[in-house]
Length: 315
Image (cartoon, rainbow, N blue to C red; front, side, top):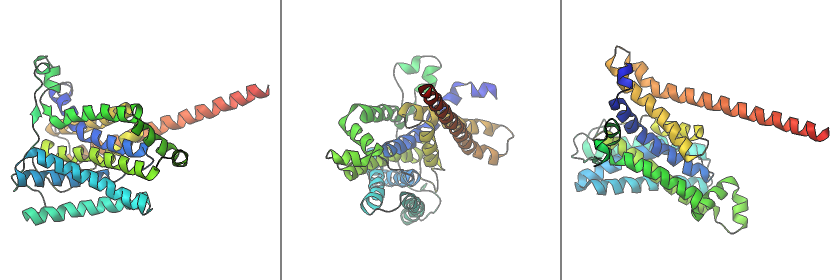
């Protein structure tokens, strides 16, 4: 077991399985920075996964499928924004409703185009190509881990840097963070808080769409019912563990990717499959407990420091 965990194959799988979680994490992060809790990531990933597969099969062009999935993701994000921001509905109820709607809609659309409620295996859909890096693939061990990954895996790394630059190095990022921290203050200097939130939700949907298409057009070659399997919610947990910082959130996503890859590796041993399937979710619970305990400890330390400061001032 130790040899398998320390092998390049295991680490290759870690990067592969972390990819959709990173996209989900970035989706949650950009929306949260704008002051909106986007819990529709799971539904967005499902819709984009099906949209990309269906259009790629219809056009026989993988890039058209990719564009279609992106458009679906942005559309779902703006759909949430319309009801929550424009119609002033409760974000939690709206998010739950959209997730449930997406879950049923994908099955219904899949049945319409294939006559099957389980998967789109009958469609001649295309897959996003893997990329072999010319120089890196010749490096021992590292080449076996990094090279040959899906194009979307490399896009996840690029998107992580893009989101960081967007949030902290551009005027739009400043507006997003300002609206998220105190919308009234942003509006007092002429910013349209609703417009900024809608832009952030559109970007959030775009990030989630890549995660969905990775599942159906890279990790697998077809769309299957409920194939996202909670990765959208795991991304929300990773964002919370990262404390709203892109790099820390990506590290938390990597932790869940390790747990997911470990579950795959352990399938070769005589371990009940039910336990293996629960490993990523158990890791989510453990991660949130550790994060909450650390946060509570930091708050207690801050309170004690304030008490000491007040005592020193009085003395």
